[in-house]
Image (cartoon, rainbow, N blue to C red; front, top):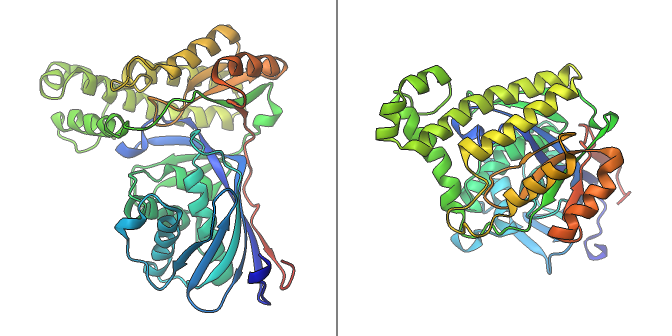
Length: 389
């Protein structure tokens, strides 16, 4: 970054990836999610520059990403690119009345891509924090940063997503998020130290491809909504299991069997995510792990996001879950993580058995497939004094 050297203040910011601890596919129907920031992060060092040009060099990305922060309209030709994400974040800042300006930045992306740890959300929040610290004295809230990132991904990048990923990355720590009002989700920090337990939290990248799976993901909220409308609601929030079972014949006829099962999953999984947060708040790891297992079972039987109907012969998620169950023999917990159909599972493995588990799973899914996670606590953003970068 020598050719970008200047005399103004510099900022060093860090935004973590995230893992979903509970609430599988509940956010889009106004449910409750339990998420945690992890120790893999996106790190940026940046300095304000003259004019409106934003220039970013990112580790592992050839060339320089350039965006004019005075031109924030979505561009069809930029969809799916980091330029779109930066332009979208800048657009969110400007539309909300915050100060924007040009800057030069170098980014080191430590969040592994494609393993369900939200590398794109971490990048969005990281770029938002650069704008926040350089031009807005850190006044922009984590919720605003999350919204700007979500809007960038939805509108500029061209990918539908909820707010959970960005909010977990922006707020950090273990976070219980209630999406009863999606415009103003209620968040609560849960004080719990996974590092002090006898279990290692990890994700296993099964190597399954997400290509062509958009219809599978889209069908989940669509079917939940269709089943909820049979009961006179636009979303599933507020319905009870008793209501659904009483109306089962009508829901089957008007929305289908799978929609009914997915609606049951939503109701119980949203309640379960709240119970998981309470278990952690009380320091009850045994109860928490029991709920993790129940969550995984519900995703498998009711939500049905472990096997793709597009490529049913490819079943890396059920294989990883089965191998983990047999290895742990009931001591620990396992569940699918994130959208499903391909991607990652989550496991809580006794620490003294983790090296053997890692070797066991990587013999099947490849070297580096098992990623141990540490939950990252809030408050790691840092502003550097003038001239130190």
